[in-house]
Amino acid sequence: MIAPGTAASRRLVALDAVVAAGLVLVAALRAPGAAPFEWALAVVLCAPLVVRRRWSRAVLGVVLVAGMTAIATGTANDVVVLAIAFALYPVGLSSPALPSWVSLAVALAGVAVAGLAVVLVPGLPLVAVPENAESFATTPVSVFGYIAVVLTGTWVLARTVRARRGQAAQLAELRARQAAVEERLRIARDVHDVVGHNLSLIAMKAAVANHLVDSHPEEGRAALATIERVSRGALADVRAVLGALRDPAEAPPDSGFDGLVANVRATGVAVEFDDSDLADVPMAVRASAYRIAQEALTNVLRHARATSCRLGLSTEAGVLTVSVVDDGTPPERPGPPGQGMLGMRERVALHGGTIDIGPEPGGGFAVRARLPFEVADG
Image (cartoon, rainbow, N blue to C red; front, top):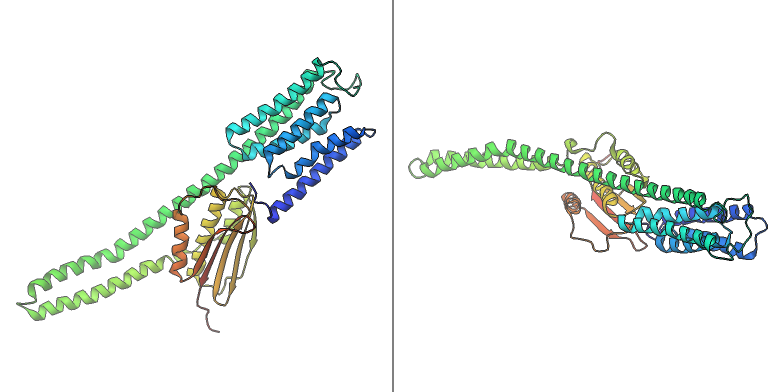
């Protein structure tokens, strides 16, 4: 679902308006001498398609009623089938399984009822149908079979696209979880390697000092001096481990931000990438920016129900700004912040920066993180 008022929403509405106008034009070419009633019916049939993505079920209902009227009056042609198919597609794409199945069944049943009315009700169709033309009045079984194949095929396509998008989002989530697990394991190994030995030595020397401080003061003081020296080293090691989160070992992959964008685009979500020269930005800050963008884009796939988003990078006055803005809608009942959002806030706090996460006034959802860094002299 697309939030209204966004650039992507306006583009899709314009595209649907072109499709609707094209269908009306085709209807006019198919029936050059059409009566005013037929023109009005064509407009009612096609005009709602302009907002089919926003009010998909309502549009399907209006288009289906108009299509049934066209079938019953003998004015139906291929435009009716195409209009119903265009209206059915977003319902199949955005609805859960049961409502989607019901929508397909209602569409097929509506067409069948209109066709039976033509065959069984005296006085229908209202418009004379040439004997050599295929219509419900002449070949009801073949015409209904054709319409059923088109509508069912459209519905299957929509469900397939929905399933693939869901699989892509699950895969992105799985990869993010795997990366997080690997990162935690690496940090745990580093902590054990660089801190474990020093803490063992401190414990041993503290026990020695405790026994010798009265009977052998010099040796006790030497043990305390060793404890001081080793504890300082342990503190430096802890800082080194924390710093490892921001060193080249934590650097983005070679594909960098371009790779992130490519992965999201592969799921069917359109991505605008406003890149910037990050040559003067320290590797630690770049790495955190990459992880923040990665998590924000993953959330776009998992939660936003968006069709497009924009990733922006900019530097000004020693601050790197990372922004991810989508055109989707957040869940109606958002839950508590997940580990991903907490992780983004922690990374920003590590650099003394700020982050804003929340819905946009005009629709959509945004993550904007500002990471300060020291600008090299010269």
